[in-house]
Length: 326
Image (cartoon, rainbow, N blue to C red; front, side):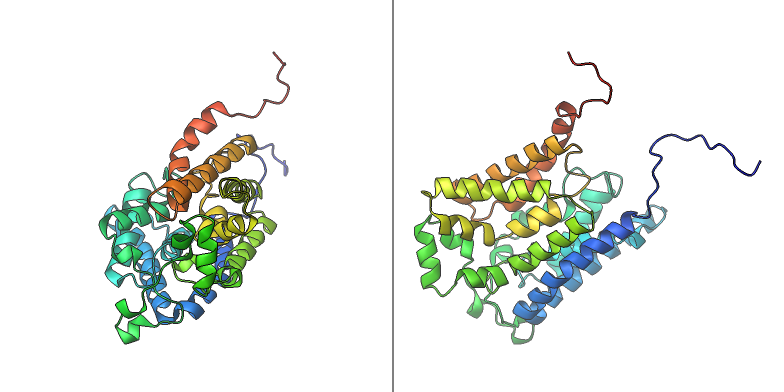
């Protein structure tokens, strides 16, 4: 018989969208913001991006080589991890710290737990937390845009405060921020000091929309996360619309919402679970930003809800098809 009956376990729907395809789409989505970062931070951004990516790819290759396992660097996941780590550190971070952070993300957070699909938190954000705890001064040395410290070698002369440090003052921080020469337009296009990933909220939003269009992610998590932060900052900020808009556009909210909170491995499987997950992350981010000792709360909010994901998946389940109502 030419046509044979093939018996196999589910799922029975095949797709060409493997890990490498998804990671390529993420890289494409990050490309506009990467170009903006290179424009605003010049060679310093290129330096950080290069060493973070090389460190991530090299760490994964060497770890699997030593453990005599098949190399998985061809799935581009290490490149994405390195790129996301670069987006979560200052443009002034020394090259060896970039390599160390990438090695921590890949070896400690990803490979030790079994590789891609087995990590319980986002590797790039875990590496950011590790670097921030280990090198707090270097991780909070923000520079003004347009400065090429790689060639000038003078970092201290160009240090600046981030928009979130002004917004930490509350609604008065908006006026202070505007008086310092930072407008809402600067926040939208990325002409502000901060992490490389705080560059150009509009281009990060464009990359997120691209991922939704390609079916890589859904609108649920980013919408509820950003929406929660906007609503809470609007209410807690004395119903000040400008303050809420500035809070959404400033910092790493956009890159966190579209590129890290939506990680398949560390986010819930059901839509209801994803809503709970995103809202909880939004509440944590807002509380840290407005009442915590640190101006930015995106990375910690994501790491905390990553840990809660198994609990959400345990108690939030879709109704089984054909199930009889109780």
